[in-house]
Length: 430
Image (cartoon, rainbow, N blue to C red; front, side, top):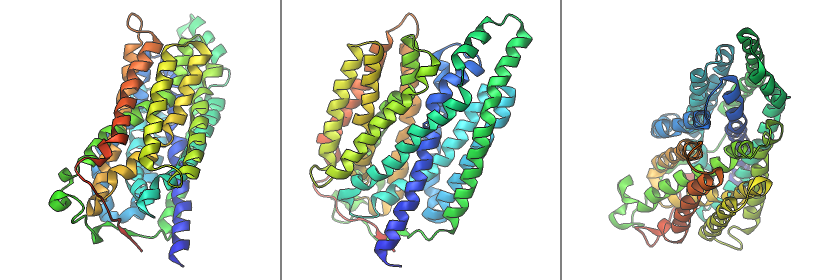
């Protein structure tokens, strides 16, 4: 097989994995209102623990994932990640039977563990599968796979678990007999069984496919960044653009999750029922798909990765202000448009941050994946700020997003160049 054919096959395989990432990750937007009802949670802040449990796994497992990948290699590490995700999916079955919010959160954390391993392997893999300056283009293609799945998954899960949810919610609230109320809640919780059993089976099958595939290996240990930075980049601490990138990715994931997962709760606060709000995450992801298509045709032919990041950050600031100064469906539209702003951020931040790391690429990737914990922090902050007696949902949303976009704009203009005037080189591929 020629190198070009091998790289093309690798792109297809990684694209399938990115589809899986998107499908599992963006189920959270549907799970938040579902679990709030099923587990009878009292506040939105509690409901947003869904994102906290899921994204905290990235923080705790990213560096161990890098160590695992050093032992297993990229391909076997990806297969292992899929198996761990399947185990997390199966935990949803006893969680539903007992209606235990803690067990649901445990299942989400285990899913996040598997995704941490997959993300730590696949993102640097696709970034350095070709020229680093066009990495954003390749990641944009992966993003289309990711967000297409993300747009589909809430529709599928919503249709299965939130069918007639508004009327069922009223029946549960009106039930005076505790036994009758428990029966209704158990009936609703049981709807989660079928989709998560199917998900676990698909993940196991995909793990076997990856294990038996012939993905080309990436040899990050064969080159270093000697001469690329002062101090020759001998330790991971000597790459300030990486550490600033970790902060940037932390803030980016926070606003991405806000736009995708918090949009439904925002809509509910505006008096819109579950029958409508279950589709709102899909609107955000459609906007992201548009952004990815733009990235494929413009980077690097028309604009650079860093310029795309700057433009994205500026539009994010404008849309955040639009949310604050509007209401109802107009505000919902501005939140969905944040998906357009967010689309090219990951594709730009990741390659800018790992550029020139050489043999430190796996650890740099792990640190960046740790930054995904932003999704565990920013949405619960929004839930706390928007609680009754504090701020309006519009003001809370703006406070949680505008400063993030300001920092991302700084990284696009200056931060990605910190500590070096030139970063060159990419790992060998065989």
